[in-house]
Length: 102
Image: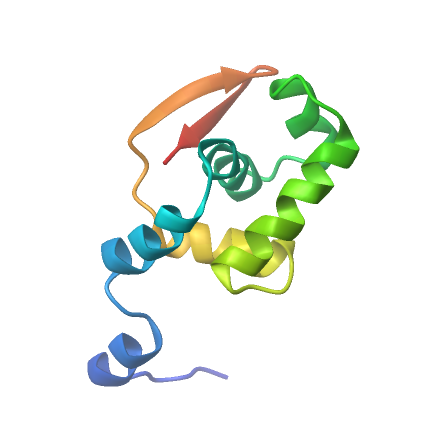
């Protein structure tokens, strides 16, 4: 089964990528932005905690705050939003994996 989406309706659902991400990014602390980059790359909470030299519990608290600020309800929705809307501006290596930093 395939779904056909017109150009006009796609823009109604997905506003300008830069604008949508920038609106969310303005609400996020720098560490939260970094965590979003890790989430978009598929990192688990424990892996993020190791990369950021913090605890897994701290990452869970950050994620709760990020979900509220980004207007999403869970990790998958956050990852999809980040992948669709953000434009990476740099990269770093953590645990042998590349991480896009937005």
